[in-house]
Length: 361
Image (cartoon, rainbow, N blue to C red):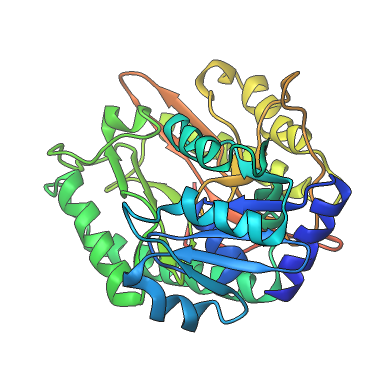
């Protein structure tokens, strides 16, 4: 945790910020180790403070031993009041806050409490950018989550039957993840059969899996707070020629993108490697979402592999980043194909972490 805090402090010094209030749960956990549902951090040049309520005082002392714990009590001493006391105590003229997470009501409460004591300064992405590059402990945990996900998929696939519903298949996959060691699922599992697989984020329902048609399965295990994310498209029975053709296009698009992943490669350029191939094969209008996203304490975090936008240009990949690579083709009335692996950027290229079987078409 010291290295993470040191890196954050260097950013605060560079931006002339005396303190940062951290309220995003994933960022709180990343910096302190605290996993409770009610916690906030105040990081200054020489102080680490953790605010929480009486339910978590013992837990906070255990999980975040390098932080001084300050109790908040509602309604007598809520976070804004406790923060005001600390700001006065430490002589803080300004406190930065996570603008993307603090609500309008929350900002009003902080502003009123700190009036005449400290100025509030909005910032975005300071901790999130640190989280994009994983350290060895994070990579070890991610590998565990990915291995559990791969094993659960491989164990469940032979048990699927045409008469099963999407909902029943999703439950089987969740049970397999739990038995395999997941503390939770990373997100509600997607099982989408036939025409439903044309919806990238379909919800499992009562549609039978059926024979000889695409079935998209999107799943992941969460382990010690870290998420896996895997997508496979399968059929029960013999796939027809249309399925084989589209599957082969998606698989080749993924292969091309992964081949281009290395430190310094720009995220939008990696996206283009897959997107341009799908377009050249005549399906450009059927691949609308980004190619991939970072994974870690959030299942969707930076960096994003997507088309460059004026307000969001591509960023260079760095060794230690882990992203999904998940091209897809979706055709209304027929279905879709998506293939997703998690990929680690290494010093000289990349390594595919996901090992669940794919179709041989």
